[in-house]
View (tube, helix red, strand yellow):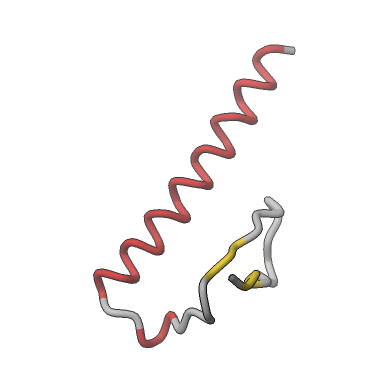
Length: 56
């Protein structure tokens, strides 16, 4: 497993992949799965942040 470094990463999310993903050569199905997984993680992050802020 390898960590993929993202240049603009204000959330500090670490992305790991087996091998090195080549987004330019992904099938549409693979790209949609990749994008939706990332969107889900970002949504979870913001939901957790909101819950923590509401608890204060």
